[in-house]
Length: 145
Image (cartoon, rainbow, N blue to C red):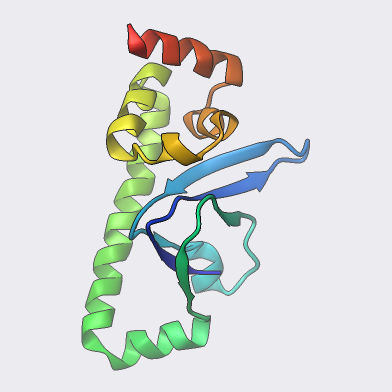
């Protein structure tokens, strides 16, 4: 499913072979939620998308998406700009996961997506940050000081 949401908090998650949940991304107000690989390669997604709040969502199937892309020049331009932005965000997250401390990633999340802390369970925030629940508890105490 590829959707966009208003006034909502979504997360993308996947299960490992041990059934542990891994969260590669949170999404908030007015962000587009797309599994790019699934959409463009027309393959089943390995991720699940779940909304943590009530929202209004629109769904586009592949054929409709392609029709819009090829018949509306502004949609095509927007799509290229959005893909560039999405690639930048994914690359930045990848770099941040290895170059920033867990506390720095936590503080960055507070600034960039404060609504996450209202709606997401702490275990999901810990997974997103790449830490254990226990480590997140320590990080939260450290951040307050």
